[in-house]
Length: 233
Image (cartoon, rainbow, N blue to C red; front, side):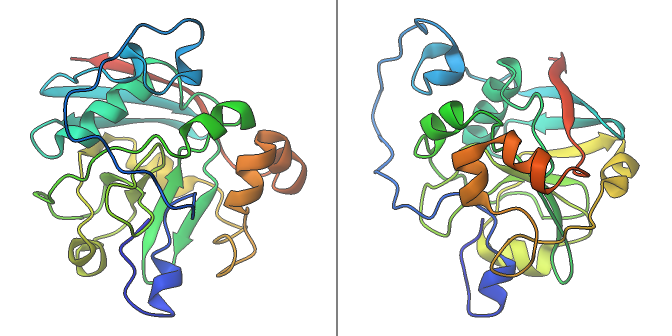
């Protein structure tokens, strides 16, 4: 999501899932332990807090084809580490592309898990902000944020055009860029438009509560991620 400016632009920039106030992000060392079961249910475990390679690629097989994101850890280390851990542990598998905005701001967004049980665990599992180093040009990938400091969790978006004028000013820090398959993202079904209150698309609040069952019933044409995996480190 974004650091909001003023209405109506604030509505356009609302890129995060949760409007709850997030707890402070720890600034000192945090003890991590291996997951007792499914790592996706334990955001604080070792598996979900790995240090990413300085450069790696993540491949996303989708209902429209495959696209590849190249991540540069030196662009945004906290974002790169979180993205690496999520992809490595299958968090994005079967995610829907639930938000596609093609107005002043053009982005495609995903990252809300289809299981409400898992989604609930991650709503407040935020990471520290990264300073913006790279420009938000077409194809760059960022984490969504709520407008509050240190509010990035699991949602990410790709800029479908040069969004520097809007997103650079808001401090969004790209951690990677689509290097293959940008045409796949441009083919994703966008007929439902943005979510409320600015559009008639999926409600992020309902998606958090009801998961993919809600999307399958009310927005059956949404495209989705079949599988995401690390393909080069």
